[in-house]
Image (spheres, helix red, strand yellow):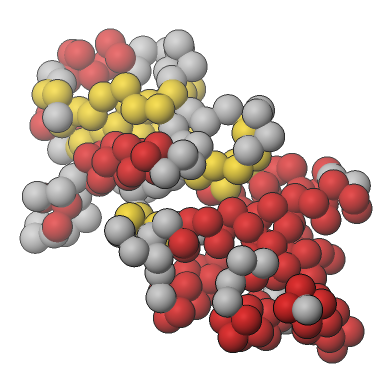
Length: 235
């Protein structure tokens, strides 16, 4: 990590736009050149972030995602700013819109295709060993190149093996904690489940079709449609 003095930090953030803050202070700044600076504080005296700062995790996770050809922010540097008791990651943001921003604007045909792509994208993450604890539609970006990518990637684990069933279920529970995300996916629940399950073995496909129908709080009609989709793809 690069050490920054207070003067260097203030020079870097001069005329920056504050994008996110909490009662502890600034969290995300949009700098004058269009790059972002994300600040992290250590929440407890004894914490793993003492040895593995979140800024470093963010940067390493970006490297791991790039190795898997998953779009994500481009890291510029990581900093330790002792004068304000913060670490920071400096990066170019991933160009595009989050799914929370763009899904409500899509017509029915585009929404159907996007939801199927989203299901397939999450399946890709799970298949490539990516467990993204901050998985929700506000952290998945439809890029300017019409790809799906990830942002806010500090809280992530990237392993060498595909996620097992229990890990996949826990990861979906992160996504479906948000009622507004559920509401946006419900109209295309069949396509979302089909996208996720398309490359799974038959037993896993049947299991996750049923599981996703429950998480999406799908009506009986939608649940039947998901089951029929599963059966047709097995034939």
